[in-house]
Image 1: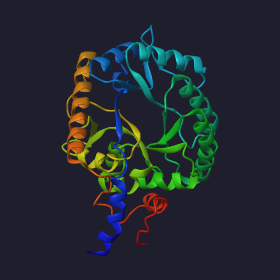
Image 2: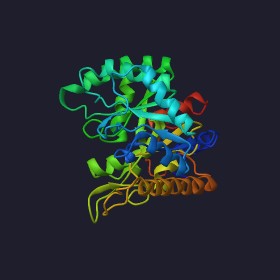
Image 3: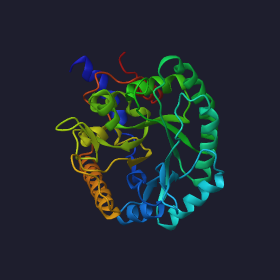
Length: 323
């Protein structure tokens, strides 16, 4: 047995003790952006979803695209939107902050968003930014301030990949390590890793998966055209993407952000979006069903050594892995 096998054996044994991950398949209303919010909800429910993530803008009664939930809106507005979702038999699980991490007013904006999410019963708020240049330390301070407030409200801020110092899961894990708060975790966006950085997300998630609490599901193609697309239409292997998080014991949303076919125009009618939403759900269900049947453990063979989070878990369980 090699030294690497000795190192991974206790990690794999401990991983098998974890309960299966409970995935919540959700569709964002984002793909339905050109259509009213109510139409998005009915389409998502009819496509077979039980969970929804809020997009950013939808047409109002005059046909003008406006924010679904502005930062300045009172929590009652979020509560009302949540009630509408539940009337459509959809549980809202995620929303966007719509304020970049490096914005000077980010901490105040996140406090408002946390109040809104708590009122709506939404457990996750997506936050992102590039955090380049001199903004890095201020981003850490913002998240340190926001984490305790989020935890108290029963909400988690989840940072997703968006270039710069949030380019990959490995980058975000560094941020999370410095923040050191369970109220701030990661929403993995494999499509952005391949799109923005031209990096394969599979080796990346093998290093950072213990920090992942949600996924923004988006695929990407570099050929024959460089563009984002729906899951299974691109170059990302979703079996390999989800394998590391199959046994976390967590409830984890998989929220479809992009469901569209590559190379062809997007549907002009909502019925076309409905069909793509259903296809995305069926594809993800197929992947999860296959990985579940295989009994996929979270320890990935592409990871050259256990990450710090796993080492901490192993030590707390009584194991003493080699260093």
